[in-house]
Image (cartoon, rainbow, N blue to C red; front, side):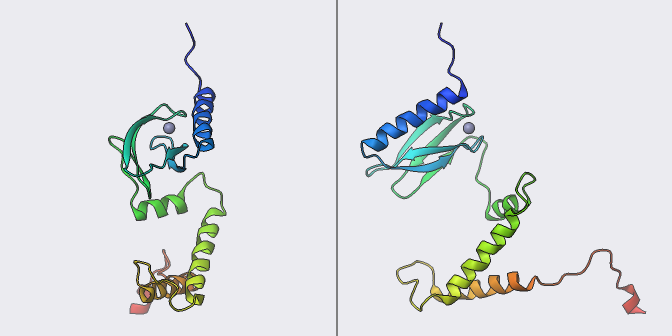
Length: 163
Ligand SMILES: [Zn+2]
């Protein structure tokens, strides 16, 4: 009886298949296993979206994915995507993250805010988001990151001021 393929063998098989499809002109975009976050690729459909059941070659977890022209969504029972707040916390507080990660994120935000402030009027033409609002947000977020607003220092008792 043939042994069950190991992890690296399963991954190689999937990569091989994907490469062959790409060679014949198929387009792919990244998706991530909802169980172990291993990066996989979903074929971009020619027109209609399609949903498929997939097995992750890394952890063998099962999930569904729907591939559309513009995006791919992944679902698995009992799992949901992080909210905006959760994903930001995850990026800022991840215990295994490199110490420079927070600096990287803050630097990226400051750069983006500066880019919006410097952009030529009308740069958001054809965009669904209002340019004025975008500029307002760039100013607010950029100012906050440049100021590091002060907050009440923990442990400091301001009872003295009440005397
Ligand atoms: Zn997985």
